Length: 296
Image (tube, rainbow, N blue to C red; front, side, top):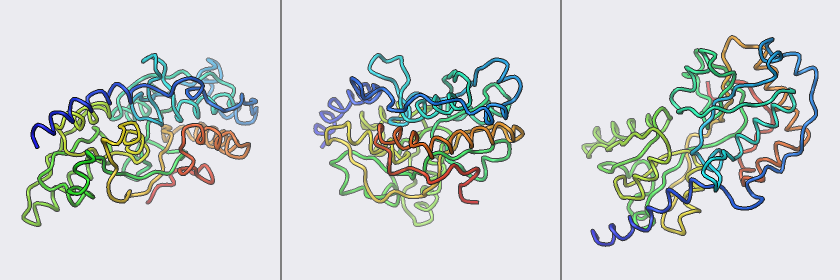
């Protein structure tokens, strides 16, 4: 078993590099047509944004296929940057992206270091003290393991005594802790939670067998499983369906309306659907752009 694990680790080590790269050729380009400016929505923007003509947006670069690096290892691509660019076009401003860590998004938007942020963040009530969410995608969480371990690990309930990789600041950190508590109450070994600053670290830990499983958003779990050539497998049923939301400071009510209006327009004119289809994410499409639409 040890030899088998070692060989598997060597094979999977290359996955981290592979999955950090985007699709080749035209697949990395959005199918979204250029949008016309909606003057009414543009007029809702804060004066500083209208004056500068720029919308500062915080994002990540390692959560494929929502956001990740193209084959040049520099260009950030994915559903989220495509969607934000289209929203910017509707609002008549240029979107300027900044890379930041997931767990600094809320503080960054609340402190107005960024006008908006988008990085696969679940719209959860406890995150709304300073932030308003404009929801753009419905999702769930899933478990990713080595294919050879799929018969032993089939759900969160099978993680007692196992090492689990999760990304810092995400809901999956809480999931791992809750499952660990459940294990201990049942007289079983606790979950060994390994918290990493990004998804790359999580996949690296799984690929080198430092972790037995990765618990993350279903879209990225499915993506990594598909990129692994059968070496990694999503197990069990996805759980906790909630929307991802674009982060806006709670006090910027006019900006919330502008972003919601722009997203609604993209939904009506078909651009939203085209972007999701490009990244094979159509199953997560929302019918409308809700505000704070996650479970209360």
